[in-house]
View (tube, rainbow, N blue to C red):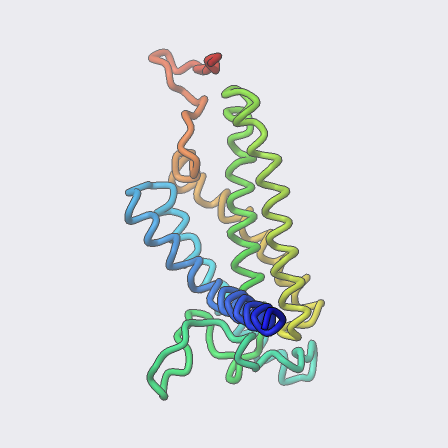
Amino acid sequence: MGSIWLQNASNTVGLVVQECMRIFPDSLLLGSGVYALVTQSLAYGILFLTLIESSFIYSVINTFSSYVSLLGRFPPSTGFASEKCRSGFVMPIATLDTLSMFGQYPHRYPFPSAPIFMLSVASSYIFTTLQQQKNELEALGPVYATRYYMSALFLLVILAIFISFRSSMGCDTMANLIISSVVGLILGTLLVSQNLRLFGPQSINLIGIPLLRNRTSSGGTLYICPTQN
């Protein structure tokens, strides 16, 4: 009885993990929009718009790769069209198998890998924003300063977990996963630079810390001393 229960529990956990992985790119986009609406935060609103922009960039790259695939280059993984590898929310209507902003794999070439691409963009974006605010984090003390390094570690671990899952499930080839992650990481960094130029430093202040830029009446730098508890 105990072994049967453990097997059922293991199967249930496996299905939950697969479903979370499958809906990740769409839920990341929608989740950022809901969070921006609830918090009324400029930075998270810009992040939501940035992820929408990333989805359109993904569509452009994906459309181009669909034509390249006709030439027999970069063949997809054998399991890319399976249900566990497809992105999107399952719909109860028969004519809508899944609802996704990232296309349907049976009809489109699976490059770049949507989950890895979007996760890489988001990870790079978050890390680059913290990199831009490194001086502020250090001025606020060691509790804040460590966030810069911890975020880099955790973001890399999460990305590695997703890459390992997609590879082990046969959803994407390793070449696809590596290229998708590299393209996403570069794009995330470029999007931070874009938002800085268009909207200013507050547009990327995701953690809401005071910025050390022109905060005094004379336009000088304001330094914040952390208090001792």
